[in-house]
Image 1 (tube, rainbow, N blue to C red):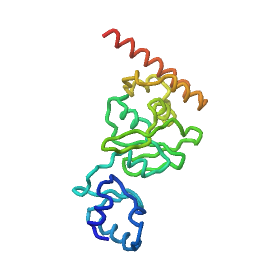
Image 2: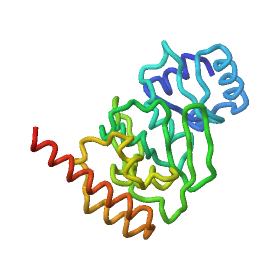
Image 3: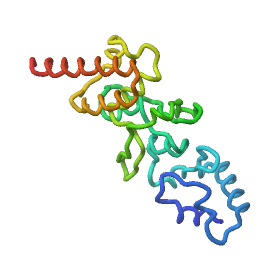
Image 4: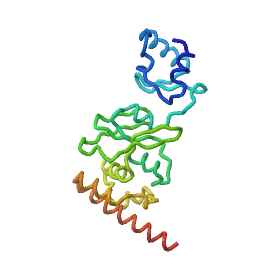
Length: 209
């Protein structure tokens, strides 16, 4: 396979897997050898075994970190502060991408995957990202609950205030309660009660402006 052939196949994709290149009448060993050469030459970046992205200037679409996270760990979704920043519920930019998975915790550079029990693996959705990309991201309400679940003492009002939560009118408090009831965890109940109080206070503060 020539590099021009690779560009024809994957030039419009933010990410690609080895399997895409092995379809049809090709020599698998030759494809893998060429990929290794292109990685060494800096034309292709390897994200993990079997997962790649073109390097600039050949890359037409820069892969969104959330798309990369989903691809690095299939069966995961972005949550916690990463999702809260995406929704504008916290003001800070979050440099690392946090995801949850029912598998074992892992880390690839700035991509962190934390374990969550299978009965708590819900409350996420396919969301649109820039340049026609999509990724599985926790609903805003679940992102807060996941963060609290994975963080010690995160059910305290002090911790939640440190997050500098904002735009809480976006939250669906009925859905928040549904998630809490489904999990049946006292910590989640305490967090939800604190969030409801903060949301009400935000409304009062807005009216007083």
